[in-house]
Image (cartoon, rainbow, N blue to C red; front, side, top):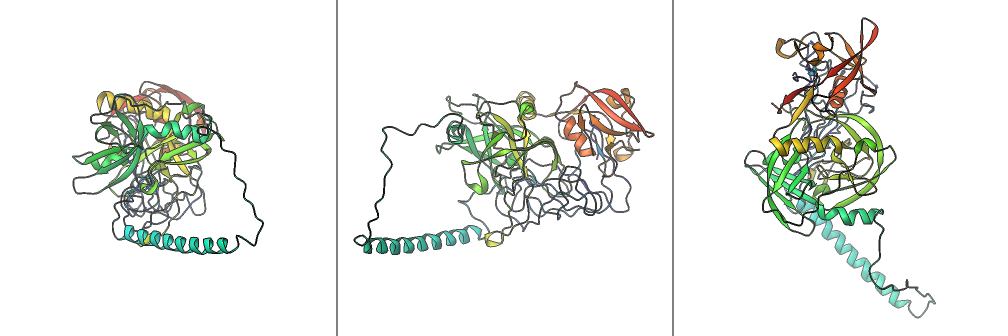
Length: 506
């Protein structure tokens, strides 16, 4: 598949069919097993009701026992959160245009994948707990009842023992002094940040015309009623489906999709009859985030709305490609903020906050191991590897969607290989469908780039693969000038490229 203006990916020429690179939507999960030298991808968090058992989503190994280019150790192929992932084809990986369109990822999945399965994106779209399907809900209920009964029995026994010992011990309890008024919590504490941010966070339920769907998260973007979330969270409601957003106080509003960007895995919805007292969350500066900074995530993991978890920024500029794992889906790319804050299916689209309560990212995918759930579900949970779309990028995309309803992608007009082991993003000899690898008159052509060149850096960011280059390009805007470092005939060269533009996801 090729991507206009961004670099088009062209399949190498292996005997076996190339592995498609999927795009997260965003939800859910993008984990598709890869073999040989597939591009590593991260599964997104599963969304909606549990589906077929999910295998362990893992980054496709770049070779036997070799860590993938994204810095993840090779893992067992996994299925996407949306359902079972499609096994990757061993051998070379198809090329993709540097910038557009994105090829499907090998293993990653959206954090909100549908059905069951580990999400490749930091957060997946979780299925609402109140509406169990496939017997899972019933089993969960049975377990809860059993736990309550056991708790009741234990409590009764404990009370009897305590009563019987009242006159035989000299134990005295001490109560904390009673202070007038409520406990005051500083604005910089987790409790203070959560208290301020929760009222502006919503639980989103998306349902397609055939009744399929799931639950994700979003947050108030402006006073006009726009809500920012992941594309994969609302994908089921795009073509005539049903979409609702529920605030922590229980108020529920119907909503409509204003615009969605599959490649970025970003979407904007708007509340119908939005209240006049909406309080948008303050947006931070994701470029200023440092590894080790505290993070707070809010979402609806597995349908448990208004859940708050904490962690730190574990890494920055983490190349992540994820999709729902189906053979027909495209991949979403991001240069992600990595966090160890607990993110699970249903967290997708929710805010990742800094210690001051400012939004620094949109929780979108997770790396997860396989897990068996109650009733046969295999939705997996957090293992401390979550990924969020930097808010600086998401803000630009959201503003474009509100303005025109369609995304705009920066591109370089050259096709790059998704195959690993090339030492960077290699411009292919031929583009998709037999087209030229370097678009005549395009940005790459004007900058003097040619087929066979291997791009190793974009400005100061190291480029180790085609997907990494795409993710880095997408952190910019059309018209931005970037410096590319590349090798040709063993010699290192540099050139400046003014990024072109691609409109829409098609």
